[in-house]
Image (cartoon, rainbow, N blue to C red; front, side, top):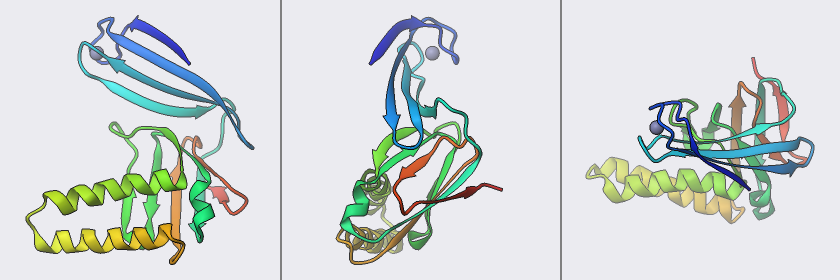
Length: 172
Ligand SMILES: [Zn+2]
């Protein structure tokens, strides 16, 4: 991993930015940059991933059917929209979106965390009940008892789920 400190920050302009990056090799996609930056002056932070080779906008569809599927590698960039239609949940691209490298279990875990927060912080019984039900569903998905479809739409093409089962099409 490479680290450079005291870089100019794109937000506040002061030299408070620390930039960390590393290069990993992703099957079928080749060299991939994983980077994170954080400014000690204004608190700005950003993490993202990018394939070295430029890709077309892509729609990625993957269905989790068994425990083994949880270990498939996931590369999600900040421009990706992640949808779990079965849970009616999604993760949007944009300013606050981060890119990361994980596996299917880790990706589902991020949704799990949102639901756990909802369950533990809301006073609304309906919302709490809904969150609990969805958490139960995720638990069954992890046990391989029920399938879960994951759809990633990425206009930069910098996202992937590495598996023979993944269906990739051009994003319209
Ligand atoms: Zn800054």
